[in-house]
Length: 225
Image (tube, rainbow, N blue to C red):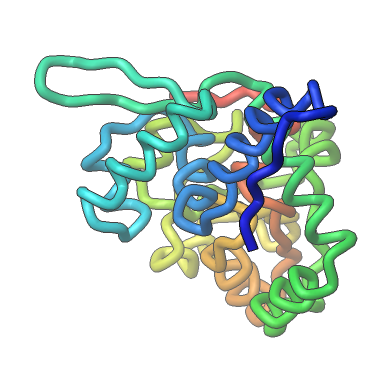
């Protein structure tokens, strides 16, 4: 069925057409994934393709669609092109979109529940709650992403412990510390897996709901030191 509509008696058609272009730009799992990654910060096309696991040509073409919808912006540095989220309003839109879908669309909720089925007993900390804990010496915030990603930007006060090194915390940190782990985005399993390892070793551990993406969407600042 065609979605073409005559503008006879419908003077607002052009407005709705342009709104529809933005909706179409978001109507792709590949593009949504790229946007989630770009919320961490600016990346080259090559870096973004490698991180997302998509081909370079596909990543580049999807970015062009997002740029046409003004969801991302770019800059050229020599032969390389760097992309970033166009504005904080884009982050707010993505956060609202994801929350609406998770809270109101049963198919989305079912997929999320199935994806995190092995971690249902973890009670996550929201980004808002985490902001009140940054100065709490009894709380240890752990970034389980790769060190390169950590150095690109992380939650203030967090320490870098990649997921495959998480057992090092068992000897390096006080046994009564509350450990809150996070990884890249809302559907990243690295931090739940890390928290599971710590819980099984009788440590008080949980995760940041939505990961670093949720922190950024809440307005949280990033540190590079």
